[in-house]
Length: 197
Ligand code: HEC
Image (cartoon, rainbow, N blue to C red; front, side):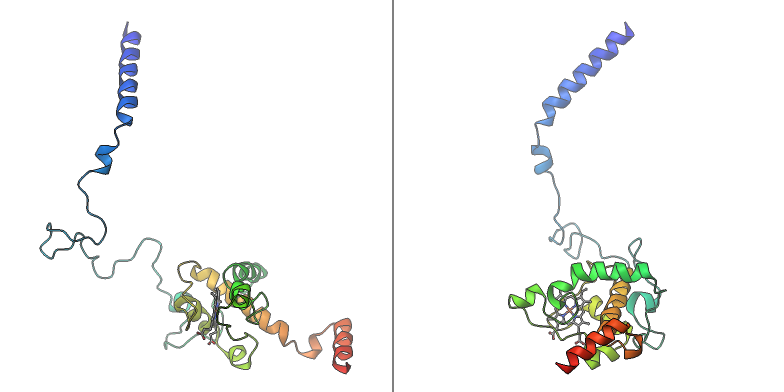
């Protein structure tokens, strides 16, 4: 008896749920205020309250200036990458660079990416002396804040990945300026044959 009763209650509820499921009007026409729309609710005419000063979103506390801004205690850009440079970091940097930077800078950093070939301003090559001598923190800062026509990548690339990309840019730079004593014998031969051409 109890079972049949609960079954029939259940079926009434599901019929109601099905029937009411079709009424979407309520949700569409409820009283609500869209973000930043003015309202008469608060005295200042805004619809939302300002965040209390110093509010930090969960997971976004960035206290370490070197890691999160590329700056030392003196406010200057750090010379070196402030995280351990491992093979995994460099490979991660290559992957992220190929995704986010190579469309303009090209996969080897000369500045001949596909977007540039289609007319976007050509960035300077990473292999010029000025950028080879530049501090690690500077590259981090360009990604964080943008530079000239290049926009910020802070929203797409989290700080850890920005350092990985700096490590890859350093790798690309080294690949173009390898001291001769580090060359393999066969590469040295290739070099001298291309130089004599
Ligand atoms: C949409 C194209 C585009 C993308 C994508 C792009 N850049 Fe750039 N970048 C530029 C341009 C253009 C300049 C030169 C800006 C100018 O002179 O106005 C530049 C300049 C730079 C510079 C040189 C700053 C200097 O002092 O000369 C660095 C370093 C750099 N970008 C790094 C990056 C990194 C790292 C990424 C990936 C996270 C990236 N860029 C993604 C277009 C791009």
